[in-house]
Length: 217
Ligand code: SF4
Ligand code: SF4
Image (cartoon, rainbow, N blue to C red; front, side):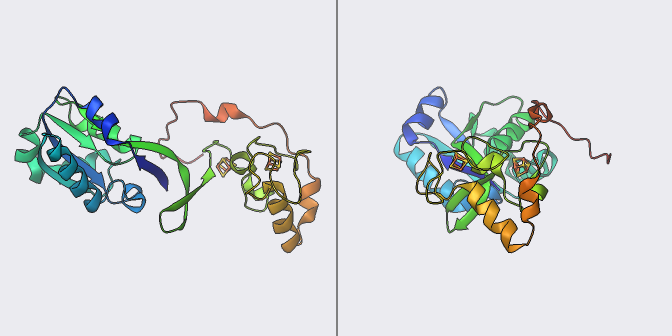
């Protein structure tokens, strides 16, 4: 899931200072799980904006905010509220905010959130990064655990000299990912995979902007 956190209100107010009335759009997927785009977050944003003298004409939680066509259809029933607003405030990830830019060509669109990373929710509203979207996944060779993301140095062939007592030298609260990979491969009786030397990673697979047509290779 895409992890986001809400910007502080002062930053949002600074961004929206040229407009007075707003329609708010959340997202029922990742942003709702993060508490940054669910109905409660939108209601809270409405209240706080109104306390600062702004008008909120309405709000809704899109099913999937980054899905341009679906969100456009869903928004039809809010036509009057949207037309009555000077601008939109999007409470989703950056992709959702840019979907709104494509939909609302004649109104300013602001984001209320910072989009942080792709990760897992390990406990309620506790998130850990899991994937850096490198474009060429290597976890079949590393016991299903990603060293590109979980090693601060992105090392691909075992731990650095700083690993101590199984912990990472960069963040001593965390296990060194190469210890985790070793233990996992050991449990799977696949320690032979530790002996295979990984080639330098081709970061050219992750040129931006990426696109995918849906065609299979
Ligand atoms: S190897 Fe690349 S694609 Fe696979 S989990 Fe790690 S960052 Fe993501
Ligand atoms: S201790 Fe392990 S996880 Fe930390 S930087 Fe070194 S190899 Fe990477």
